[in-house]
Picture 1 (cartoon, helix red, strand yellow):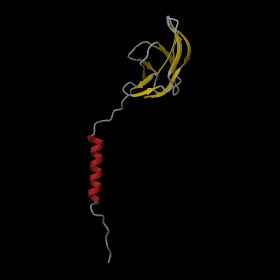
Picture 2 (picture 1 turned 60 degrees about the vertical axis):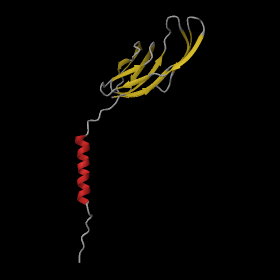
Picture 3 (picture 1 turned 90 degrees about the vertical axis):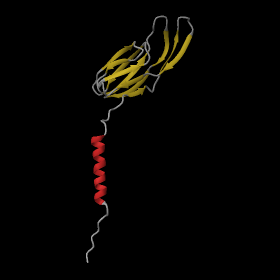
Picture 4 (picture 1 turned 120 degrees about the horizontal axis):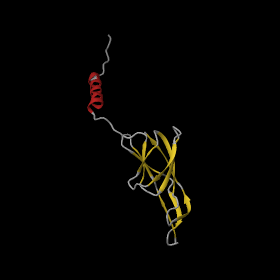
Length: 141
């Protein structure tokens, strides 16, 4: 006598899996990527002499934001009065941008992996004595 082995409910499990997959693929809203914000791991740090002649010291971290809705563009900020020297190592493009917008400055870096250094120039009435440039890297869609 020959016995048939059949898993009870196999067709129910397979049917349920197909149904769940269809809902996930066709019933879910389309996924959108959120902008990615990268804080430069190396801060800008320096010692300067202001208009009073007294030394002061400080440091700050720059941020680069890449948004998939604007491919090839990076918003850098929030600080102003600094230069961002960047290079897209995927394409070879590069440049320097002076940041003068408190809301952040957009740089057309192109898509790919971007590296940057941030420097502080001497400004009216201020002399920078020692400076460690900030640096970071991020991916631009």
